[in-house]
Image (cartoon, rainbow, N blue to C red; front, side):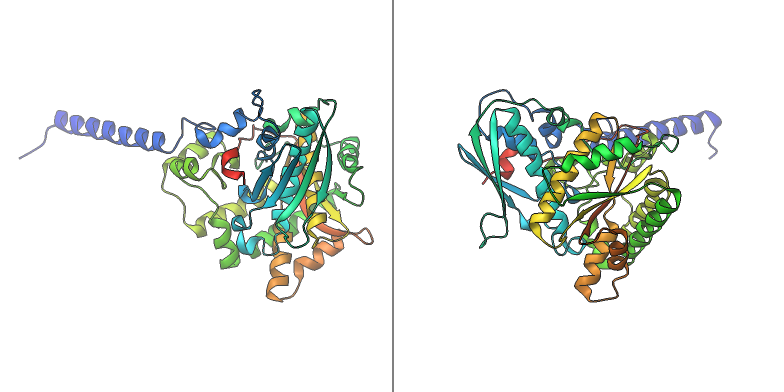
Length: 388
């Protein structure tokens, strides 16, 4: 029996409605209309609670710090006049960070936010790094003494600081004066320095090394797999775990971000290739400058913590100036992996050459520039989840 044109149109219309409804339902389930909302993002809004709660409210600021893969590798123990900061070693990111270099840098970032909050809330601080020789996880002890409150633009910038993985403005260079001011923020952190790579040949050299290190990570199944474990592809997973790397934090064009949420997740191989393309065509290609944090001993946890404090401080100050920043750790991650496997130190040697100051070692490469879009927050566990 034949089907007339009107029937065909009715069927097509119904199919479109069903398909449209399915897409809308998928979009709702994946949080397309809820970017930056839900319990996973509440810490960004409640970080400055006015109700009296003693030093605990300093932890509200600490948990918004930069950290590797948004693994949030920290725990806090709060007393009336002391806050202890501990590494949560169970949140290590595996072969990506085999010697916990990035973990301890993240702890330094949290420590910096905590100290800024203490000064804002009327405490002078005395910081002791690695106070317990028998417990390497005890990263820092912050002794608190009531004092005059000191307001700080860096403290105010805490909820606005986000890693910007989007393209930077290639037509707007960062001035030498700005770079000098950034490097000068660590005057109370002696022997923690920053090297800049701003000329076209230097930027090309560093960029090519970053891309090559990314290719090496993608080709390493264990590094690739350990990194992938921290990617959160579903909205439900984000709200439950409140950690990890998300699509929203990738600073993708709006339409691409929406489609990436609605469509089925990419395979690990597809994700790796997308990351490689993004590194080459966006991160490296649009960097106004590259920087390298250097310390006397990149294998020492105390220096890693100090380096993390400087990174957090620079990133907060950059935020007040309308600048964007992003760690590009691939060279360091491969150098650590080379050391772990006992293979030729291709990237270890490259970092030694880049860290050209005698007696200094490379800790973390990064890029900076002026943004072309607004970076989004990452999910965070709340204070209750990180208190001991």
